[in-house]
Image (cartoon, rainbow, N blue to C red; front, side):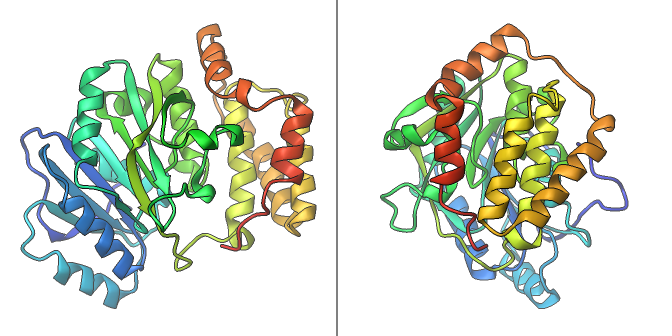
Amino acid sequence: MHTSAVDRPRLRGGTPPPESSYDVDIIILALDRFDETIKAVISALDQTGPSFHVHILDQGSAPETQARFTLAFRGVSNISYYVTDKNLGVPGGRNFLSEVGKGRTIIALDNDAVFADRNVAARVVAAFDRDRSLGAVAFNILAADGVQPDRSSWGYPARMMDRYNDEFDVVTFVGAGHAIRRRAWIAAGGYDSSLFFTWEELDFCLRAIALGWVIRYDGSLRVIHKPSARARQSWSNGRTRLFVRNRLTIARKWRASWIALTPRILGYLIRGILDRRLSPTLFGIIEAFRHDPLQPKTTMKPAMKDYILRNDLRYRGSLWTRARTEIFRRPRFDPY
């Protein structure tokens, strides 16, 4: 979970986080997208109630963009702006920002999203204070209109989408907006930085659930997501490969046999053919096979299996139903 000394980012703007404890770390990853990132930061600084510090990690913006960020954050006391020469990926970047902070709660916000109101952080802290079993909270990711759900950011069974304003337990959260109790983050070991991009949230949540933590979706905690094509990982330039590789890798971590994974692999191959992404799909499968011997295996305990069944699998239907909804009828990979 830790970053090597060689790759460790450098503080370039703002100020270091306080040495004393405080309530919330708000973490934002940046890669170009200057205007969008500034809006995200402003919405973070606008939060009221708990004490907080905002951390930004720039993972490769152009030099002129980094200079603009540095100037923008000059003199702002509760912001830390870090830069790194190497893109650590989403999980690696979040690990770094979470490690340098000391808040008892970690809130992550995408750089093309904003908080829908000024009280999100306060309600997150209150939720963790009410329920000591709560390890992480999934936010309600709204589309650009601020009303309808962002369908591209719905990480739960499709039949539950009409409950997007409700509250219910889940097995994962969507990275665009979420919160983690620091104690749960430490206990679960943070993110697996080797995943680099996609499925890192599920991987973390499964380890947290195995330790007895609850993951909860809260529709009252809203962020507005306006996806930007700039610096976005496209399905054609690596996202498909990582999507397939990482999901199979995570399944293998929990001792799923390759025979048991055959239906999933076939589903990925069919999607790859339909979306004209067969080559990266095959590479993803091959990489999962190659990395497999290095992965430590863990057996899911009955309580963990029951949690996943109650809060996810029972809403997805039979294998045939899942194939129809997730392979054939599901919108094709988005163009980014």
